[in-house]
Image 1 (cartoon, helix red, strand yellow):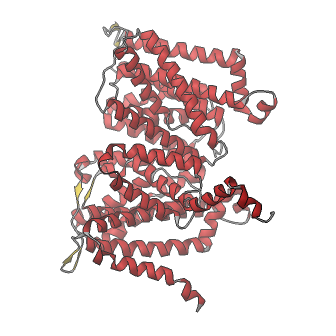
Image 2 (tube, each protein chain N blue to C red):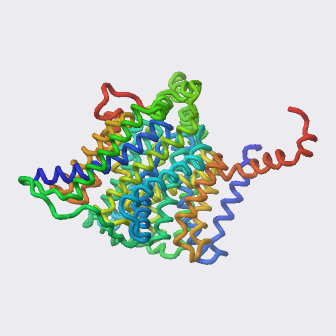
Image 3 (cartoon, each protein chain N blue to C red):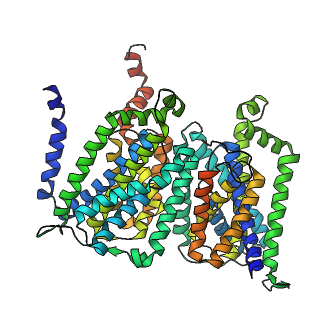
Length: 323
Length: 288
């Protein structure tokens, strides 16, 4: 009985988002679509970087691999979207072995370099393999169909994206609560110690890479249908940096962090309006500021304010009982 | 033709070597992998442009002034960004230096725009013919300046007290500070020297390619050069830089220019996968 009550807030949020498109206007639905896509990537990356402690600067590559594979399956092979989307995800996970395997040998800075190089190679392939990816002209993507119904409006696409994001959120939560999730956390804390207690390092590192790549690739497929258009620039190294930034600013290794980061990432370009040319600069400044002053992320901001306030006002400190 | 491609590879490679050297200095000396090294090359080229063209300073004065400006930038970045992160995990440092590189790039974009600026070389461009090879005084100048800088660095590290302090700090920070070396000052100096090298590279690279805010993208080639040399050794960085210049030029000439970058990325991944300790070290080491 108690267990069921715990799930109530989650159910409430679910219903809230389910009815949201009925009341919001198109532009907000479009933003929500982007938000959920960002959430999916950050959830995957949070598992890899936040929990398993593996740095990745190649997440945009998987994002792109998912986007291109799932849309090329629809365009060139004529597969239905419902088949090509998971296909893109699975392919992304398989390709992640390419960087998952070197990750067994290297970590830290070296892993960052490997994933960075991987991202650049994938991006160059997207640009130069013209008869497949259409190069820098980009690729226009048809809307998914279910029977006679065409998901052409943002409102209808919203349901695909939101339901999948919600499902993936539950999945991520369950993974982190399972044996696998605890293995990830132990990996991050100490590789040596986790090996001593019998955690198979190689296995769990590769699982973490595959999960995060699967999430990013699915998000890529959704990105394709949400925008109806993909371009190699969407999957550049800069994007990978942004994804890493999303989870770091939100709060690395916290369950709620990715959502705060993703919201910031979706809203900031809109909030800037005509100051678009300053967008990268502002991103970078926020990033630098949060790394230096708020290393545990925005999610810890309220707690941090309280600590600072306590330090500043000696009155409150006096009234507190001695530790 | 092959010989010509190799020679021009060496010339580009010597510029890579300078940047890689600065990169290794910081990595070895302060345990920070500086992702902003390439942007420093780029912004220095703009500084050079500013001093040399706008303020009409003579080449040598502009060169020295650019070196000093870059050195000050290095000290500032070390002081503002890297010192607060000394005890932070690797990831914070990676992200912070990447953020710095984005900031520098965007400042350049906002100030100078995305226009190509040509940069004159003080040396003449009429080539000498040495058998099958053509070489311009500009190329010779590039190599000579590189060699002079390498010599100065070697002298600094081997024969001066400051150099000894830097080497001591690189090998053991705690022991060095017990011996009375001010670690903080050494760190500042390391960043200043490293950025000085990067700015010299920017000055030499600018006449070869036009100056754009995207010029800093050579940083990835520099990473590869540094990894090729083993990330620990200064000689390795120089050899790695020159080697990569040659390989990149060969790939660009015989396969396609688009393939030039792919080759350096592939080398980077392969080396990190199979021999993360670099080409020139004995025995594979596990790198963390």
